[in-house]
Length: 476
Image 1 (cartoon, rainbow, N blue to C red):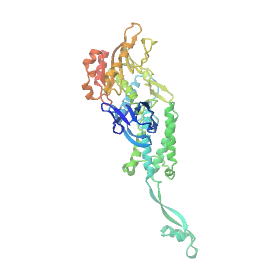
Image 2: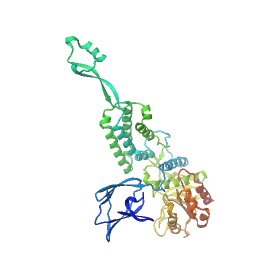
Image 3: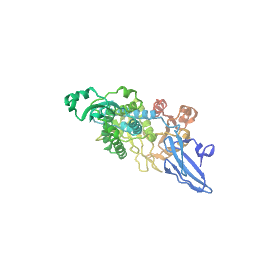
Image 4: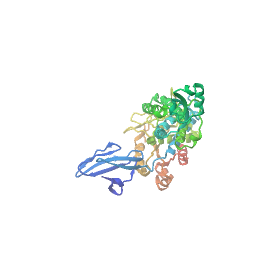
């Protein structure tokens, strides 16, 4: 079996350097083939004497099991160099929620908002934490279950007197009360030493699992089906742990608990304690999302983050008048309403508006399209003109093609009254590295001024000075 790699051409599959979220062509010389990747069969089609297929690697890195005609192999899918780190993922979540809390002050909504840094209530970021790290908790529990802390305890037992190997003071004391000489009972009570797992650390562990099980019931009752289903799965898993033979011998700790030296120094129990410490550090000022974003959906989070960064810049420039469109209110609380196709709107000064996922089609009122429906990610409407910002999470080496697609916005969105093309400027927002920015003309100011389009660097954790300058020039 061979794979096509540019520019090498066809090379043996086992020598290929596979990257996540990438398409590959495979060919096999033989009469028939049974190829399975992670247990999923891959169909081939015949062209002459060879069999061909196309394969798209998942948007995840790690080792992969390959089954080829009954033989088992293992290969590795490497991370995409354009992919943001998990730390940057967390930065985007934090900055989105931080800006949403700032905008809430001018939103005009009237509702009480609880403020706390550490809470046992449910929140969007807490669910993201549970969903992303439950597999790590599963690994930690498996290692603890295999070799848990234990201690020695002395308990009285009653056994035949001839089986007593060593006489303790408590045994003699018992005999003094029960009889002596010829009246010594046949069965004698004596202390015996047993090993038990019912120690403080395991009692705390059981209590934490019990609290987590109760917390998961909250997520089982949310409106989003995918969240409630996963929460039910996690709930069954935790309940199974609590009923395991290991924890059945352990009593549950009552009241507050503290971190002991064993929790502090033991490599496995320490990870367990840290996991539960982080579990309750996700409460914000009562505002979050009511839907989850997985790591594989980083592009969706990147779009929201870019939008909220633009909101922040406009707010600091004193351009924001009303932010009610950012939120929706439910019985559960207040949530940022930036889901796709929701067309969230912020009203700016001088009649301008900022939209997330603005919808243009043939029957739209002020602006319309004469071809197909178009939904740019971020739109700034100012009078008869439109400025579009389009976050592109993974186009570092393909910026020219991505900018070429932006012509559909420039040519296809028209002002209904004047009949003129409405889009004045179009910019791609991308987390491109500094080296690429310096080497590509699309980021240059002269290119922007001449063609009214281009690219702007947006990296989580880095201040966006170029975007701020761009927004100031647009507003002026």
